[in-house]
Structure formats: structure tokens, C-alpha cells
Image 1 (tube, one colour):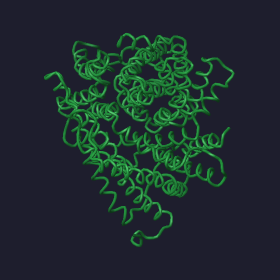
Image 2 (spheres, one colour):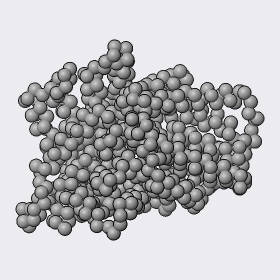
Image 3 (cartoon, chains in turn cyan, brown):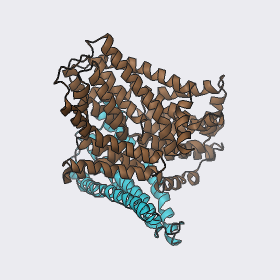
Image 4 (tube, chains in turn orange, green):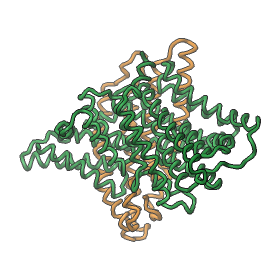
Length: 178
Length: 449
């Protein structure tokens, strides 16, 4: 269960609305994706063949959608938790667990993905990689860059949450925190 | 046991222990992947014990995530989620319930049967146990209690039907399972049709039986008599949604569209229905889109965490460990399958299907297919087993979700009592599928020659 009433901090007041706005904007990607799928199906039935670039565009949109959604879901606290036991803990215990979780699990995981995905994107950029398929989309590095971008947003979300949990646990007024 | 396998075991046990901290499962999985890579390196460098896992190996997680990103089949997932949410938020689900209830109300047990039918029709697309149990609990419980239904019967029906939804195509659980098992989504959908139908028929038979033998627990509703108007209302309410879901399944079944295309068309169709009904305001549209993002994102978060976790677990030799352990059991092939199902059943007490599908299913499936069993059959068994475990007291997930939304007066105890008959039905269904694999394999074989 999420901890209720975590205090806002100066950091979280900047980051959380930002992530919220990015998430809301990214949500419209599903509508675009839907139109692309419907368009491609119609093309196939009217003109006898679908377009490879439209098919590729579909997974470009979908992966952009879920990667940008990660931080949004984090900020909205929509990620699945098993709260069979933890709902019985006190708010303070839960905040401590949240602190350890952020420091020992989430941040290292984000670091792993960021550290290795940046060279991954850079390699693609240097090689000017394009789709292998005939008629596929160019600029493969651009969609690959969605991976570090999504995790960068998630990092912001994690730092914001960290500041709020910290402020809850150690009680310093939020104004004194960077 | 090699040092690597020792670490693999420790990693799996840490996972089981740490989920109870209540920290999001996705990040527990990802964090353990990083932590155990570090421990493996310490083993190797400081203790001189080779483990085969280092940063170079774990950096492969980026390639694996890229594999998820360019996976065209998985595009179906957000689209099915969108379709389910639109049917739910637009009130199409509610209309269905009211009109079918009016028709079946005068039958003893009819309201509970209505819930079953609606659950099967609609919960399929929401795919998350919590969502379908909450939806049916909020929609159906008050109606049934109002008409004098026994509390535990009503609660049991809602829990069972809410979890049955994940098994009935087009369920997103089946899309994810097919992806992990490298099998065709169409095959798995078709494989699940007959077992899902069988279970729903067993539910209905049980509810009719209760109505007949214990009329006081499931009284007939005294309402207006059924006239032509009621029937017309029913057709008007049920026809569009049923047509939509049949069109989605049919186009996959007959090979007209891929699951991805069918999901997109299904979502478009649902939006069209909502628009014709006049409820598709900009506010509703944007809310549905945002909900789709949140649901999709939390499923993919677990997917990414599980990808990292499985990568490291595999690197440490976890899959050989599982295989050796399973094959060393003193049983024949069928006995091993039963042991796997039993373990799944227990894990299902505290993990949702997403984690089990992503972590346990890929670990055990090579063993089962290696023994010569049909992978689609095994996956369907696995799915039914998961569903049963979500119903089982004291910790079944469905029970927890229902407890949160049930009207006052419905105690945990009455929910426990209500689910027992359904658990027996589930075990019976599981047994039938186990004994007659053709129930699963017949339809896919016919559909795709």
C-alpha cells in the first residue's frame, strides 16, 4: 500500500507535475497507435497490401507509450505492490521500507539500464542504423533513445519520491531541502 | 550445487521474501538483478568461485528490453486494455448487466448467472484480477444482496467470475503467456476457449442447482414480467458488445487479422460504440487514455524487472537447477506436471499472474515440453491453476479485492464460505483438462489446420 500523506518537497513540487504532464501527453499515443492500426488494416483490404512502415510505426508508438508511461505510473503510484503484510505495518515502517527499496532496488536498476543503454543508442547513431526491412523506418537510434529517456524520467520520479520519504522520516521542513 | 546455483536459489528466495515488504514488485525484481550481479562478482573475484555472471553479462538486459520494444505482437496488449476500459467506462457493461438481469431475474439463481455471463463477456478484456473483481463487486453485489441473495453465494460468484475473466480470450494474460512461451497468440486463445466455456458452464450449473435445492439462498426476483420490450432492450444492450468481442476473436480465429490488428480494431470498435451511445466526451476519452497508460506501464514495469531478474537467474544456472530438481522427483511425466501446478498454486497466493507468467512459466515450461507434453495444453493448465489459487482462502487475491469493495455486512468469513464450492468446481475443471488434453488442443488444430 502506498504511504499516504507523504509531504511534498521543493523538488517534488517541480518534478511531479512535470511527470504528470508528460504522462498525460503520452497517453494520446494510444489513440494515434489505434488510428495507425486501423489505417493499415484498411489499406490492406482496400489496396491488397499493408505498409511495412506503418507496421513498424505501430511498435515505435507502443514502445514510446509504455516507456514514457513508466514514470507516470510511478508518480501516480500505480505499480503493483503485495500489501498482504505491509498494510499492517505502521506508516513509519512503510516509509523506511520505501526508503530502502528506492535506494537498494529501484535506483540501482535505473542505473544499470541507463549506464548500458546510452552506449547502445550511441552505437546505433554512429552506424546510422536503419530498419532491416525493405520500406522500414529510418533513424533507428531515435526510437532506441526512448529507452534511456523513459528511465531518465523514472529517475526523476524516484528522486522526487526519495525526497518526500526523506522529509517524512526525518521531519525537516521541506523548504530546507534542495 | 555450483556456487552459481546456490546464488540462483538465494535470489529466488530473496524475491519471495522481499515482495512482502510492499515495495513495487517490478523494482524488487530489477534491484535483485543488480544486487546478485554484484554478489556474483564478489564470489568470483574475492572467493575465486566462478559464477559466469558479471556486469558485461547483465548489460544484456538492454538488448532484452529492446527485444520487448520491437515486439510487434505485444502491441496488442495496450489495445486490449483500452478496449476493456472503454467498454467499462462508457457504461456499456452496466447496461448489459441491467438488461440481462431483467431477463434472467425471475429464474432462481438468475442474477448470479447474469453476473457470470457479464463477467465472461467483459472481464476478459480488463485482464487484471483486481479490476474485474472490483467491477463485478461494485456492479453486481448490491443488486444480488438487494434481491435477497445469500451473502456468501453472491461473494463467491463475484470472486470466481472475476478471476475467470483472465482465462477467457481475448485476455491480456494469454497474450503475455503466448509471448513468453514463444507460441502463437491465436493458438493459445483457441486453446483456452473450450476450457473457459467448460468452467463457465460448470458455474452456471452450480448456480442453477443452488436455486433449485436451496431457493432461499438465490431467490427469484419479483420484477416486471418479461415482455417484448425487455427482450428488445436486451438485444440492444448485448448485441453491439457481443458482436465486437466475437468479431475480434473471429478475425483471429479465421486468420483474417493478426492479434495486433484485431486488438486495434477492437479498441476502435469500442470507441465507436461509446460514441454512438453519446458518452464519449473529451473528458472520458482522455481519462480512458491515461488509465490505459497507467495499466500498460505497470505491466511493462514488471515485464522489464522480470526480464532483468530472469536474465541473471539464468546466468547463474537457475534454469538447470529447476530442471534437475523437477526431473529428480520420484514421479512420471504427469506427476511432475502436478508438482509444478501445486507449486504454482501456492505461489499464486501472493503473486499476481503477471509475475508468475513472467518468471515461473518460462522456468518450468522447457521441462514440461521436454517431457513431450503439448505447450498450449500446459499453459492453459497453468492458467486455470493460477485462477484457482487467486480464489483460495486465506490469501487469495480475489478475496482481498472483494473485501475492499463489498457492501457492509459481507464479512471475510462469508466470502471464504462462498468461494469453497467454486474452488471445488475449479479443481474438477483442472482434472478434466488434465485428463483430456484434447479439450485444449482440438480447437487450435482445427482453426489452423
